[in-house]
Length: 149
Image (cartoon, rainbow, N blue to C red; front, side):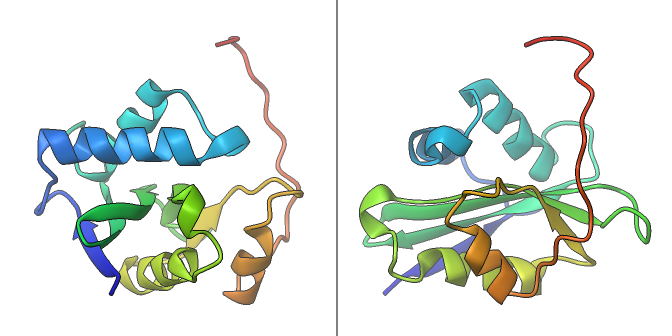
């Protein structure tokens, strides 16, 4: 049976667990991921190890194996900007299609205080799940990158 764990500024993962979550996301986000240092930064923001508005992490485990993870960062805003942004979500490559992503998203929606925004590429298969859960696409996002990484 899949167990969903909640991590935040009050219930933080250990350093080893935090590294495991970061490595898991890096390995399972595929082409939709970021470098490990960016993932770790979002994790540390969510659990308030950095000066931040916080947020939370969710992990899905079965028999102590990590099968899925979500990182939600609080924006500190409301109304015109959603209160939360879903930064990362991934399920283990061998566990996809078993409803773990849906369980994580449903728990994230319940646990979040306020609205949630997320960015998803048009060709990402998870887009259908987000739409089924009620996410809408009312805007076109445009970004100006002033510095190349």
